[in-house]
Structure formats: C-alpha cells, structure tokens
Amino acid sequence: MTKRVMTITVAVLTVLLLALAVPGGAATWPVKPIEVIIPYAPGGGSDVTARIFARYMEKSLGQPVVIVNIEGAQGKIGEMEVLNARPDGYKILWQHHVLHCLYLTGVTNHTWKDFTPIAVGGKSDNVVIVGKNSPWNSMADVVRDAKAKPEHFVMEFAPGTTNHFGVLQMLSEMNVTMNMVPKSGDNPRITSLLGGHCDITAVAMNSAMPFYKSGDVKILGVMSKDRSKWLPEVPTLMEQGINAELLNEYVLYAPKGIPSDVEAKLRSAFKSAMTSPELIKEYEAIATVANFMDKQETIDRLTSIFNGYEALAKQFGIYRK
Image (tube, rainbow, N blue to C red; front, side):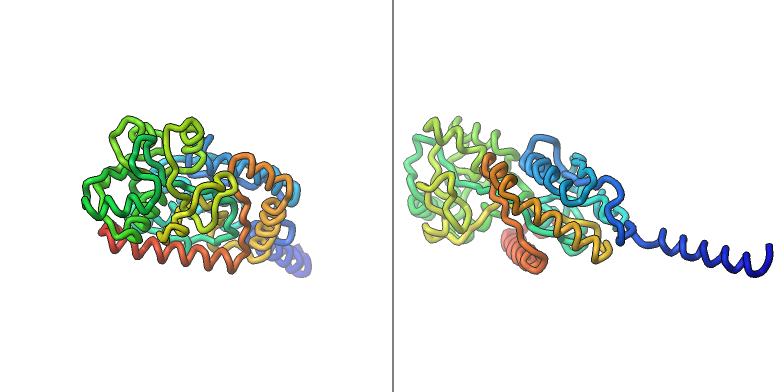
C-alpha cells in the first residue's frame, strides 16, 4: 500500500469513526423506531395517554414510536432504563410528577434535572370525595370538624406518590390533622370509603366519576386551579380557600446529553402531536387535557412542583428517609 493510499484510508476511517461517535446521527435523526418507556403496567393513565400521542408523533418523525411498559418499584425501574440509556433520542420516558416523589422519599437518587425535559404534556384532575352519607357537603365542613377533632377523622392516601403530596399540601393549607392511613390505588380507597372504613380521600376524577354519577360518593372539590369541564358544578379547592393542587400531569423526558437538534426535533414532533385537534378530541374522550408546555415553561413548571414537594416532605418528616 502506497503512502498516499494509506493516508486516504486513514482519513476515511477517521471520518467514519467521528460519524459513529455522534449520538443518534443527529443530522438524519430519526433513522429507526423510538421507544417511549412507560414505568407502569399497561392500561393506566400513563399508558393510555402515551399510546395516543405516539400515533401522532409517528406522522412527524416518519418512524414508529413504540410504547414499552417497564413496571416496578413505583416507577423507578422504567426511569432508570431511560436515565442509563444512550443519549441519542431513541429511548424516552413518559412519567408524571411521581418522579419527584420517588427522589424526595428516598426511593431514587436522581431528579428531573438528571434528564432532558422535552415538554409537559397531558393532565387530568383529582378530586376530594366522601361517602354519600357523610355530613360534609363542602371543604368548609371538613375544616370545621377536623379542627374540632384533631386526628379523629380517617384520611386514606397513596404513600410516596403525587396523591400523598397533594393530600399533605391540602392538610397543610387547611391547618388540620387527620388519622392518615396509607392505601395504594384509587379503587381500594374508594371501596374503603364506601365501606365506612375511611372518612375522606382524594382520587383521580376518572376513578370517582362512576360512583359520583351513581350517588355513592360526594365530590367536595376539584384539586386544580380551574374547574373541570367534566364537573362544572363542583368548585375547586382554591375557590374554597384551600391553595392545594393535585394533577396527574405527564412529562416527556429524554436522557441527559442528547444532541440539541435531536432535542428540538423531539419537542417539535411532540408539540405537533399535542396540539393536533384530533388528539385533543381523543384526550377529551378520556377526561384528559392536552396541555403542551414549551421548554422554558416546562422547566419552570418542574422547578415549581419539585420545590413545593420538597418543602412538604421536610415539613411532614418524610424527606429522603
């Protein structure tokens, strides 16, 4: 091999190696299917909302967007899958604010800042419910009686989740104490309420609606800033003087360190999906709002939620135990 040929060969190999070193081949990304990791079992809110937006993202990206359910450890296993993934944009995470809860209660050692937040996406409301025979018809009734009998009334909650933190925020704002009983799952807590084993709880609006329509439970308040379009007759907690919010709010994350142009393409495709009139209708059919937030708005939202939850964790003695 002549020196000239050898020089050309080395140059070509160098270029090829440099091209391979660029995560994801940003200039032509995507060139293969993209996996959306759902850190829970199929059928839940995270899974259903992701399967809807995946179909719309495919149209923009020109590649399949595949939903992969990796459940376990309250969402930790799925989060770790993306946290440790190659930062090329081909493996992303669809997770709600439980990500913050897992860190603040010591289940994980990573925060949202260890990912690349793409955008806040869909959200659905939670509600405060009591049994049909409860003497309470408003949050003012609850505050009055709970102050008269501290720790007397039983409040069930889902430990270590956004439900837990939302309930703590509510009790802090009400300045009352209750007999706190942990119980995971909306349906088990509703069953407990119907059986007279607890006095009050908070659940996803979707979970409560069948029992509300049948008259088996009363909804005392919606835990969001605005009234729900699906429950226009029910006031928010904020309207009733209780500054507490609990949303099932979903966020799309990528691994930290993805190329900036891949990040931009992901965000653009996600925005196109979430602002599609057809997707909005599909979300509304499952009582979910498509609330796309761009980069800075997403960062501001995550910062606000995390800081608020951190303060609650320290206030109630559950911080990273």
